[in-house]
Length: 133
Length: 121
Image (cartoon, chains in turn yellow, blue):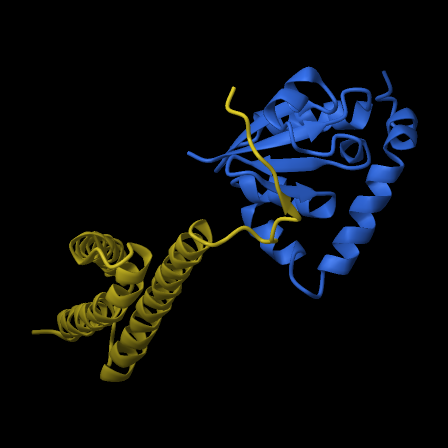
């Protein structure tokens, strides 16, 4: 096994492990938000949660596989580690971006759900009889 | 779906323009427009004091809750999907005094504003 193949394999192993870890964290901690958004409907929350995680996996693995190709020759172990570091760094940044985007989605869904059920912003001034037309 | 009835001034260009604008907005709550002091307004709300409805916007919810002036404006915002959150923001204790001042000023000068903006009829 030459040094390029080793770099690629290490890159894949690290990227896949990181993606699975972040997706797992999202799946575990996002569930509470979703249960709240869907007013305790756990079945619906779990379903939406799984769908979100599938999207997350698809985008991240898509990026990992697109970014795999190095495009230049590696001569030494040092260059291999440097190339690996750049690639894994990019994967981390994409994962971080996706993670914050997911958090943004969760918080927006939750805010909307709480507002929709809230009382009107102001109390009425008076009450009157309404004659049905 | 609940509904809000708006008693608006049909003689005020600004109000009629706002009426047209409101009709195109996506709503969370249905809005019904009734001209102030009209027969329909008197028939629907027989116990309401219709003399004060000419001073500022009046909004009546289908259970009979009456909102007058700045509160009525906030209820209209509350009914619109795009401005729903703004109704809470503007009704917060920090912003409510300003909201009241601005709304009262616009309502009191609505004929002058309509004339200045070329909306008079």
